[in-house]
Image (tube, rainbow, N blue to C red):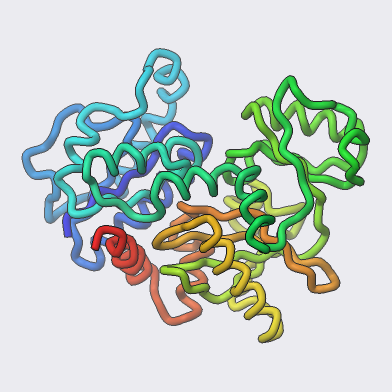
Amino acid sequence: MNIIVLAGGNSTEREVSIASGQGVCKALRERNHKAVLLDPYFGASQKEENLFPTEYDVDKAADAMREMSSKLEETMKTRKGFFGPNVLEICKEADIVFLALHGANGEDGKVQSVLDLMGIKYTGSGPLSSGMAMDKGITKMVFEAKGVPTPKGITLEKGKCSSQFADYGMGFPVIVKPCCGGSSVGVCIANNQTEYQAALLEAFSYENEVVVEQFITGREFSVAVVDGKAYPVIEIAPLQGFYDYKNKYQAGSCVETCPADLSSALTKEMQKYAEMGYKALNLQAYARLDFLMDDEGNMYCLEANTLPGMTPTSLIPQEAKAIGMDYPQLCEKLIEVSLKKYQ
C-alpha cells in the first residue's frame, strides 16, 4: 500500500509525534509498504513526482522534521491555517493516511474532519469521538452516564470559577489538569489550598478549561482496545512520582509490566471497563484507556487516548507483543481495523 504517515504538527507533543511516526513508517516499510513521513504543519515545498519511492530514508526524514521544530513558535505567530503546503494534495494520493499525531490539531478530531471532507482514508476514530475523548470533562460526563467508573471531579472555566477549593465540596488531594491536553502536560497534584491555586494557574496557562478530580492513590494501568476488543492489561509503575510527562518519555523512569500482575478476575474486570469506555465514546479502530486501581481493588477509568504513542516501546506495542504480535504486525493491524470504517 501507498501510505502517508502524518507526524509532527504544532501541538505540545510534536517531538513525541515525530518519534511515533518514525517508528510506524519504518515498521510499515519492513512489511513492504511504501510509507513516507509528512509533517502536516510544515508540509512539503513541492509535490514530488514519485511520492512513494521504493528506497526511502525514514531517519533522515524524521531528523528533517526535528530541525523544523526550532521554527515552530515563530511560524505559529504568523500562520493562520494549520495545513502546510501540498499536504492535502499529497494525502489524496495515498491508499490511507496513518495518523501518528498526538495532542491538539491531530488527536482532537480537527484533522479527521478535513480528511473526511476530502474523502481521504485515515487510521483511528472519526471527528466526533476524537473530540469527545480529547476533552477530559466531556469524557468524564460520558463515563458517568454509561456506568464506567471514573474519579469524582468537576470542570472549571477560566475567569468563571472560584479559587477557593472548599467551594466545590471535595477533599484534598486532587489532581488538576487541562481539559484537552495530552502527555500529562500541565498536570499537577494539589494537597492544600496553596498548591491548588498554583495548580490552577499552571493548568489555565495551557487552556481555558480544566478538570479537577479526586486524586486516587494506587496502581496505574493501561488497556488497549483494538476493534472493540481489549488487549492484555499493562501496569505502569513510576520509580518516582506519578505517570507525568517526564516519566512517560524518559527511559528507565518506569517499570512497565505486561501482562500486569493481576488476578484473572481483576484483569477481566478492567478489560470489561476498557471496552465499555471505548463503546461509550463511540471510538473506532483502536484506542488506549488509562486506569487507576486503589488498595481495595476499586478501578477508575481516567481517560481514553485515541491516537496513543506508537514508538516501538510504547504501551500498545508492549500489549500486542504479549499476544504474539510484533510491532510491524501491529502497525499493519491498526490499518486493517481502520479500513473497516470505509467498508
